[in-house]
Image (cartoon, rainbow, N blue to C red; front, top):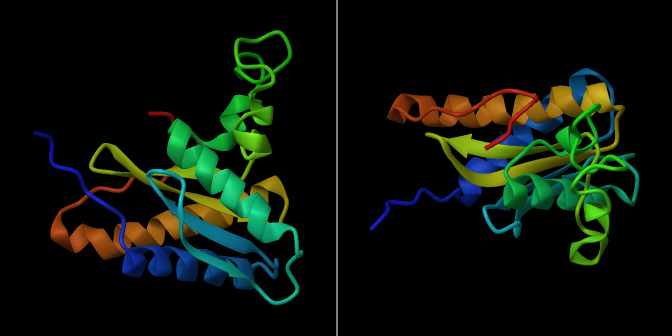
Length: 159
């Protein structure tokens, strides 16, 4: 039997707080969603002034990153991004009733080598979404490091 770690609400809230703090520091109104390994939201927060479409987009990105175990922008990164025209997963973004996001802003949450969820962000440029997503992952790392757990903090994650 395999031991499984699960992301809990306190950890999800810490990630949201880290991402929102970075967004506030760079003056970008973001929406942040943290999902479990099945793509189900644990925490979702939309900053004042963030777009009303942000919650759905952030959730889609978190869902995709968690369930497909890769950063969402890797689907469209030339030349081998699988969702690019002519490549093996072209059209995948129409899967799951359009929930599958293939653009920047979604990152799997990897703890001790296992994907335990996803973080999705919407509201900034790609660069800003990445910065805020990394801040969320860094916040989780700060929470889990004292217990000896390792969190992958990187923009390009593929498991």
